[in-house]
Amino acid sequence: MGSIFLGIISGLIFGLISVIIMLPMKFEDKRTAIIGSFINRFTIGFLISVTVLPMDGWTKRVEK
Image (tube, rainbow, N blue to C red):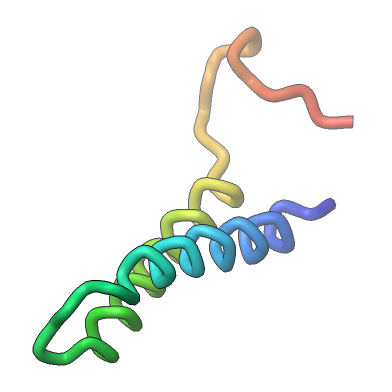
């Protein structure tokens, strides 16, 4: 599975969890708050999956 596809999937999952948690809350502009929360969590989930950090050899994930 490619890292971009994995990033999209994890971003969608994190974003949807954030939206579900926010649904019972009350805001002045609920739609804007939910959209902002979804975009924030989607971006975090996407970037965690596609970012490659320079690390020592023993800390890297082994890809097959």
